[in-house]
Image (cartoon, helix red, strand yellow):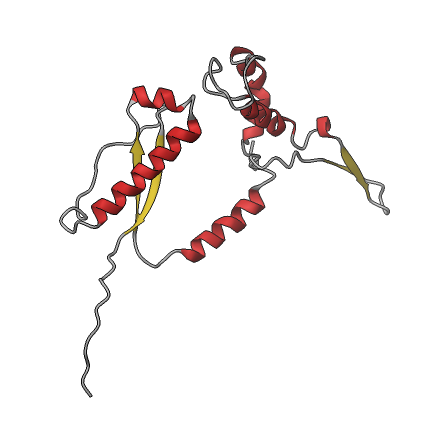
Length: 187
């Protein structure tokens, strides 16, 4: 269909019910607990439902009627969920523009740190703790490597795969900061 585009909500509406039935959360679990749910929390199920219902009759709406020709246009209400790509598109563009304005005019590298599979499995059950540790370890590694001039020119060429592994990404700028030096200028 020319002019149309597939949206996340379309996929959720077409396949969400079957997927949820296969991955239904246990009522005995806490809202953020993802054990026995295929790594999907109850809160994530709620987000999926909100996106599915966004701008449909399920959330209600209002009718705009032209005073001249009596043409009616139905505008359905949005879910306003912070994870909804349709509701947050304008806010995301504004945020991205602000972040781009903060960038220095240099090259950047995208660094990916991945946990080994046995630890990644633990990360799905203890996300906050494990990802905080991973972020700290990633930052410490970048700082340590950046402090050693002989190592800063090396690159990792391993391919990055996202097959349900616990990863964190770091953006590092390409450049160097010179140590502050003072000169004793005589008169």
